[in-house]
Length: 171
Image (tube, rainbow, N blue to C red; front, side, top):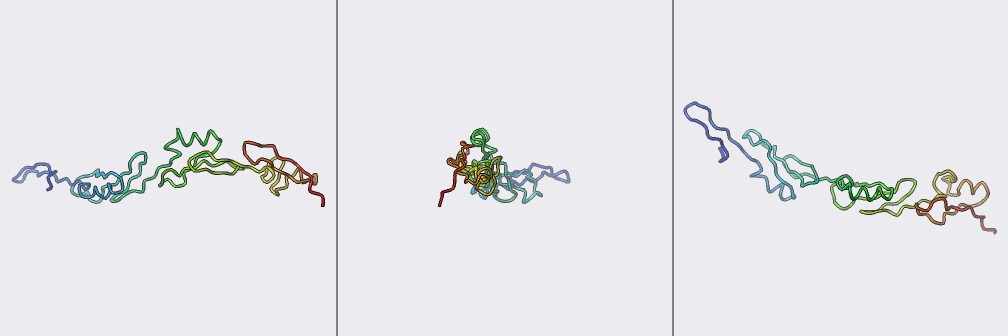
């Protein structure tokens, strides 16, 4: 038995149990990936059950090797990232939870726009999107019905209802 054994008795009486902490042999594998080695079952018969555990806030772990640490930066940093996006009426998205600093604020349709790690500049061309006074053709239904063109002078999502019908240029 390795030094972690429990003393037993001789002459046919019960003998001690042998413990084996696999992290004593495999800790470097986990530490090389900035993770912690954990061996929950140290009994001699339990082999290959050691795990690499990611540092907080990730809760990812992997048996017998380094884990791919995942952190959804919108969920973990809810007080900061998600609130920042929500305050701007945008959604927080972390498309790749395996890398840090790549969360995004995304505009909510029909507005368009995205920004990495910050509030996006959302744009909406009311002449191109389907809405109460427009149609997908890009000409604006109301304007087209009057033989005119629809013009969106300021596509910022903060400036709505500023579209205009203009007469087409005469030849």
